[in-house]
Image 1 (cartoon, rainbow, N blue to C red):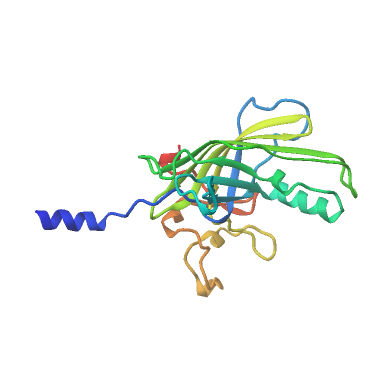
Image 2: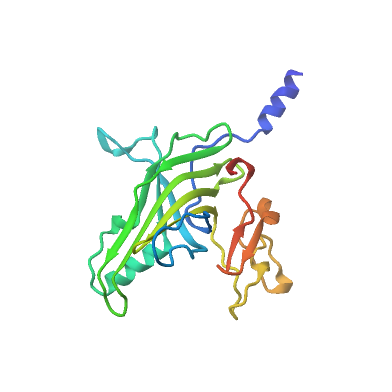
Length: 240
């Protein structure tokens, strides 16, 4: 019995610290009914590729050493990043930190449900004057209730969050579900192709490599035509 117990224990996957997939998540945005305030098109978002990055800050008394007792999360959206790059190219000064949302994980380790949580993050905002053919633009992202599913099998590749989005004088709130890595599912002709989400290669079909998405998620991933991205049909049970 002792031998059997030790064998079972050795087969269990070890717990890992809070982390996220490094780089882009394919995120779907679902408008929260009745949340829109003001006039404008802030309620028309469908999704985006958003970048998440987890890191440990420096120790307070030694900036050269990481503080492994804390874990921070940074989020950057493609929309804000692209707009900032466009403005810089036109000679408009940009505060690079303004396009990042920053927050701290509640713990460096997942909770009993294998979830790592960030209750609130700093807002990311660009308030730009008119330049080129672009009118003056103000866009603000406020992220909250970010939850990342973290296990040895799924190391921070699925997430959910709440988003309050402001464009000009219009504000709306969304529920967000994200999948890493962000994989496009549009073919060379621009038409969506769900087979591009397949984690398995298909040499006969000309796909020499798979999508890079975890094969264990194959049945839970679909191609979203409006985004041309492979997205989760629904988040894992722990994030619902």
